[in-house]
Length: 233
Image 1 (spheres, rainbow, N blue to C red):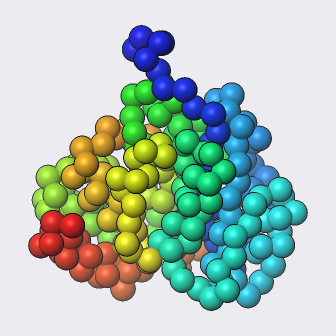
Image 2 (cartoon, rainbow, N blue to C red; image 1 turned 90 degrees about the vertical axis):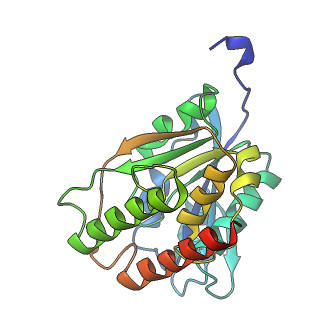
């Protein structure tokens, strides 16, 4: 690519939705460097109705913390964080889980295709190995295949929460879902907007079997996919 046409970026906002993650969020934030690919990083933690010290620990690690007094859901927390990032002049936004499922060391690889001007949206793609609980592995595989059939776009892992996009792309993928259906809705909107999308392979990390998308969440995601397919919205 002609260097003169490479977009200029100034700040990366790492949005971390969190609920009752006092045991792990400190370690997550400690691993995030102050710069990524030479750009300053701003950590934006959204405390989604926690009853523990999640917010306090996040502040101790230098994050800007935004609090939902009650639990509104992951999708709602992500929207709050992205809005805060845009208000703070972050032109690259990264979504990252608070429970340690994502490695901060993957951030350079996640943002690199955006900084080089090759992509508007970058998705983490987990290796579906034995490290992922069998029910989660099957659910992710099924939802990913159904997504391809229903929307004509193929992604390796539609449910991975580690992803990055430009501030312009955010306005095209902005979602309505407040729960775990947010990742799928975002990709539906990305496919319909024909955003340039890249995928980066990352490790599969599960500290707790109960963490992540449950069978009930999977059914809700499927219902959201059907609604989006029928409505075209």
